[in-house]
Every structure is written in C-alpha cells, then in structure tokens.
Length: 239
Image (cartoon, rainbow, N blue to C red):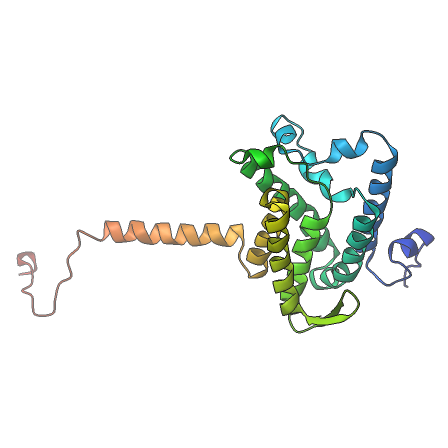
C-alpha cells in the first residue's frame, strides 16, 4: 500500500516536482536566510571567518552555505537547488545527495581555512552563501549529463559540457575582477567535484599508494637476486 503524503511532505516536494531532500534544503536555506536578516547576530555567527575557525568556532565551516545576505542571491540559490538538485538526487539517491551537499560545503570551508594560514587576505575575509556548493552541484550535473541542454538565463540553450566550461570559466573571470581571495571556497568546491566526478576518491588514492609502496619494497628485496640462465653450470651442491 502506498503511503499517503502528508501536507508537510507535499510542501517539501513542491507538489511532487522535486525530491523531499531537495525541498528540505530549499526550505532550510530560505528560513535560515530570513532568520539571519531578522535576528541580530545570527548571520554573523554563521559566517565563515577563517580566523574565527582557527580560534575554535568550528561550526562556521558547516553553517555558512545556509545563509544568504540579499534577496537576489537567495532566489537564485534556491532556483539552482531546484533545477540541478532534482536530477542529482535522482542520479545519486537522496542520502548521497544530502551527504555530498553538506560535506562539500564543509570541505570547501576547511580548504579555505587552510589557505588562510598562508594568505592574510583570506584570513580576514567573510564567506557566506550557498554558491560554492551550488557551483559544485552544477559541475556534477554537467559531468553526469554532458549532452543534456538547459536554457541559460531562460534564453540561451547550452549543453551540460558547455555549462561546465561556463561555470568554471565564469568563476575564474569573477575572481579576476572581484579578487581571488573572495572565490577560494568556490574554486575549491569546483576542483574537488571535478576530481570526484571523474571517479577519483581518497580511498582509491590510498589503495593506489599502498600498491605502489608494496611494489617498491618488492623490487628492493629482489635487487640481490641473480637471474640464472639456461646454459649456466648447475651449483656444486646438486652433484
């Protein structure tokens, strides 16, 4: 028997148009952004300040993607989740999609904090908004569906492969005009998604390194061995 959806389920799925995990993330983004605008100090406590993270405020590497500071970014961020999150949730499954969304935001935040140790401009820069994670989701979608077309800005038809180039190239272009320090999380998230989408993983890298290490040890142990030819005289102990 099919489970009947509750009104809350219908709200999260937008009438069945998106998976509930995508609708839930959109709802969290909207509610958190509105609360950040209405509650003094809430948004400032969620901003990713690398210096504050190194001072012990570790939650900032997780909270910053769920808050937007202006209505236009909020609307387009929710639309990005609506357009691309639906297909990714169907391709990956809702659990993997949610884990990927949260972990990529946190990983981009961690990379940013590590870069900040060597770059003073990043150390003092505030990072807020869904766009680093949204860019990574667009890269993933473009690599999974390279031949599928979408209407960019509701007018220009582009394929997934072209969208990949436009996303990465657009981020680099913005970083040229807006300063590279402001786009460290975006570039980090996109680079990590490119690596992940091509089938690489930390587990696979670790296994490859182990195999190569074992091969090197085996070659070192075999250096003192001598290959005996067919015409060589047999050792005396065989007589």
